[in-house]
Length: 174
Image 1 (tube, rainbow, N blue to C red):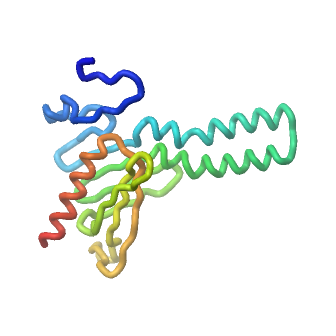
Image 2: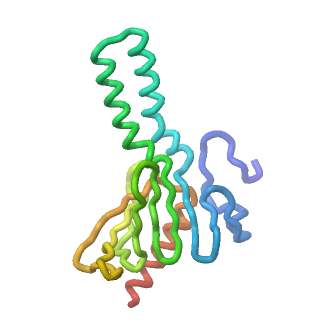
Image 3: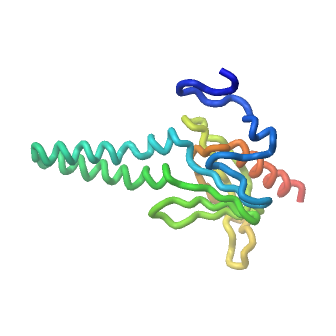
């Protein structure tokens, strides 16, 4: 197959572009201290499924009206409002800060100096869970408190893992 994957399998090793230092695709390096990552396409589709379900329920409710169908439509729209922004999120790392941008939500930022831990979710997709100290009013990490930020499964996630682990290791040395 000459390095190409046929079917639904995933690449199991670094691509040729990674060996050459190029980062093609959506999780592309954009500068010396900036990187952007998008949700894996399969998970974008998965997170968008409630919208398709809501459309099917709407068509059914219009063709054969019943009160319970409108309630089901409302329920699927609520689920869609929760899942769609997660599926179309983007993560950017720039100038020592990680930012999670989601449609219909305010950006969540984490100062990498305050990063305490990095865990990989054992669930499908191996999403990253970040433990960090939030920033206080003076712009410094508040070491007395801890917060958690869950990221969706990302393309080129190993690159982000390495960067975050390096930030944690650097903090541990200090």
